[in-house]
Image 1 (cartoon, rainbow, N blue to C red):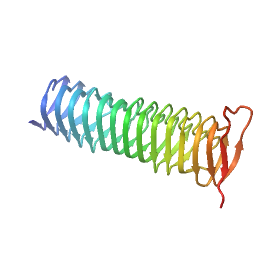
Image 2: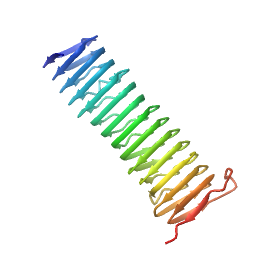
Image 3: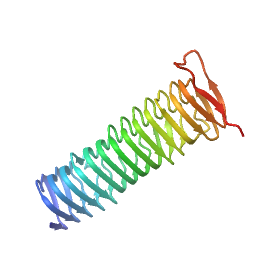
Image 4: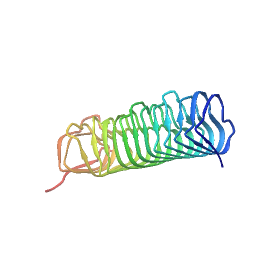
Length: 282
């Protein structure tokens, strides 16, 4: 493997079609497509300032690198990538990829990041600001995630999440086969129109969560004091610890809680309208 150290490259496609290359403390300055149509690339301690630095790259390891705000849309169409201990300040990262792993990465502008990824593994990642991260991705495994981005995890499939703290709005819409363990999910309109969404040991906050859901399961979950009008038109099996402020028009299933502030069943309920709502006995 060839090594390039302590150099700068700029302009259009300076390292085009490079293969079996290691970059150490390299700077990609203003320009476009610094590393394009490449394979077997290692980058350590590098800085990226220009647009689209990693496109159509097959097999790469990126460690201790920095991506500046100008490096927008930096990593697309690149498969089999591992990124560790990096900071990203540019938007619209990671699209149309397969087999992407991130460990200890901080993304400070998560706008439209992680779109259409097949095979995504995340460990100790922080997302800040932006909208719609993870849109349309599938086969996702998360262990440790902090996010205040809006509209996270929409239209995703086959997802397992552990130890996340997500503050958001309209999260997990139109998802399928998603399980979340030991996490805090705080935001309005959580999990609407989901299929096979399962929450285990989670704390839920925000208005009108978990409505229009099909085959929704909650195990040993708690709700914030202001979390209201849950489960409207959902088919649900829920074990809730503590009190939930209000439940509204669940379609079917069984809900068990220690107490309810209000149970709303009105003329707008949808069939089969046979959900059991039970207060747990002391």
